[in-house]
Image (cartoon, rainbow, N blue to C red; front, side, top):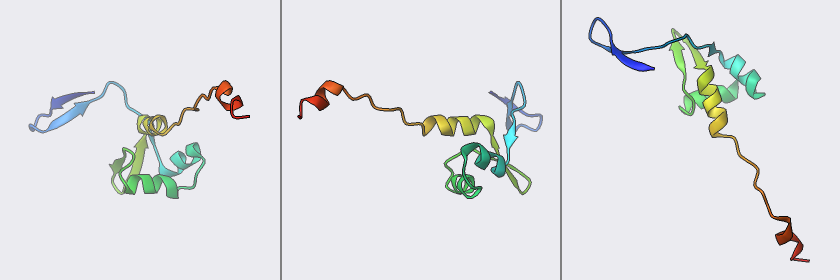
Length: 86
């Protein structure tokens, strides 16, 4: 995404392809939660969202980024260290 100036001098963004916007219900379904959880993420500004009139939409890339940022990798414990205790 690159910043461009619009004809009236305001700064805008040009996009190469339109991105899918998801409703709160769709985000909740993908996360396996109730709609209350994505609404709380929006209220706390913990996820990027777009206002379309009175509707709120979440870009697919924002949902992917949220999932990536909150994914916890498993820790790798050495088994030999656990066996020494006994």
